[in-house]
Length: 71
Image 1: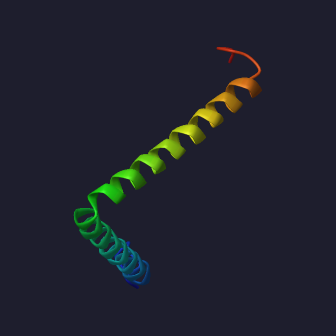
Image 2: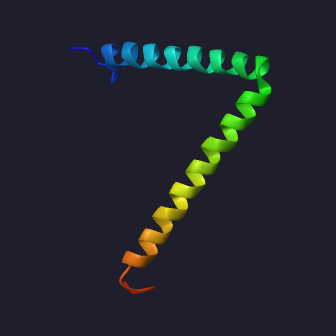
């Protein structure tokens, strides 16, 4: 019986996922260095969309909340 608490197949799968993500981030970083204006606009649009979504969700939560401070 193996006494290690780690599953080797899960570790291999996680390692592959982490390496893939690292390669993607490296590629995006290189592209951001080559095209800074395009990535600046892209980043601004993505952050703006996230702010609008979070504002909508907060408003939705505030409208659907039944009361304030009750336990």
